[in-house]
Amino acid sequence: MKQVEMIRLRLASLSVFRGILRRSVPGAFYRLLSAMDSTPDVFLETYGEFYSLIAERGCADRLAYAMTEAALFDENCFTKAAAGGVYQELSGELLRAVKRDCEAILSAATLSADELLGEYRYIDAIRPIADELPRWECGECAESFRMFDGSLDQIAAYYRKNGCGMFARYKAFVWRDGDIRPVLNYDTIDLDDFTGYERQRDQVLANTRAFLDGKTCNNILLYGDMGTGKSSTVKAVANHFRSEGLRIVEMPKERLRDFPLLADKLAHLPMKFIIFIDDLSFQSQDQSYTTLKAVLEGGLAARPRNALIYATSNRRHIIKESLSDRMGSVDDVHIRDNMQESLSLSDRFGLTVCYTIPSKKEYLAIVLAMARENGITMSEEELCNGAERFALAKGGRSPRCAKQYVESLYT
Image (cartoon, rainbow, N blue to C red; front, side):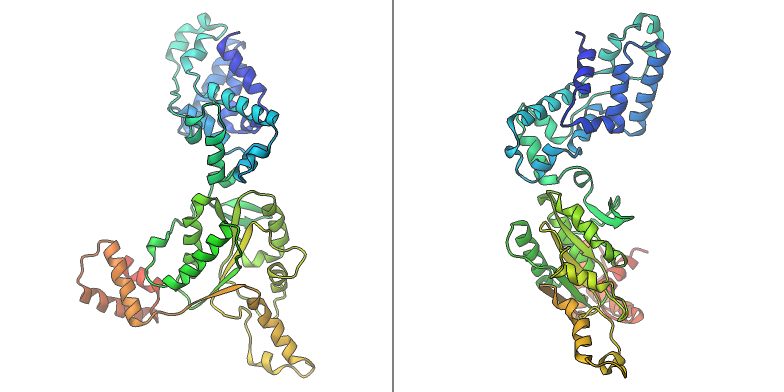
């Protein structure tokens, strides 16, 4: 049997990694292999469509990467088990099928254009045209497949570190339209971008570390003055632990009623997640906070074990109160009960971390540190005087104000 036909049949018989044939490049490559006995016009059209696709996707010079990357990002019983660190528990027959699939994908990924054209049934009839056809280059395979030697350990280690499916391809997500959607351009902020608030960040870091290690941990409410880095802390911590399989999913506060749906989707995944709720606050008449209360503690649709809730708010007690709320209306019999109902949400976070406006000394220290990191050559006196004027115009000192001031020096 010819080489190309053998590769086609092996791809046709993929089992565990069969999903890659639904991906654009592997699917188009399989259609090209299937056209080897077709008439010249059908074959040349299929060849042209395939090359156009890989050129558009930027992989005309690295076909092997495109083919094996599709496998690395495939979501199947093996990749899920490997991401959860339990792939050894799968049956021997299933693991043999995985190895066979990997070998089939690798053989297809290293097939050159000349090898394919050399075995085309009617090559003599299209020889002048075939000589002019563009050729792809195979290049190197994607990460773990370069080290595949018949053992699944390297590939399993990749999934353990990076997750599987879209959670391997993307790092940050948002709940939208009833499903988890990837964030294509996520904030890459890291812990080195911060100056000040070390105590607060250490609390969040320690709690997240305990979560990843399977130890006792808490949902966190980060509250305090605006512009002090609450949201940035959550995103930076998520980025810090990304290589250990942690992912972040933002839940818009207006969609909190969907929390049971999100919990069901996350509960079946092998990775661990931070569910991020930014700028959390409610009006007193807004009853959607009861959904979050039930999730935090006491409800049947609780958060899954592989997820923590990190929320930020400018209010310690989250729910806006007025003096009339505390005084009660004419027909309020149990005013204290109403007040306790409003305060109980914030109390259900196991850990609360407070961010306050920095002092003048702390603010200027942040400005000077950011200026040094960004190569600003102004003297300290000039920087400090300018930073104070900028803060006065902004209405107050904060890390956000410091960042904006330093950025303004580039204009």
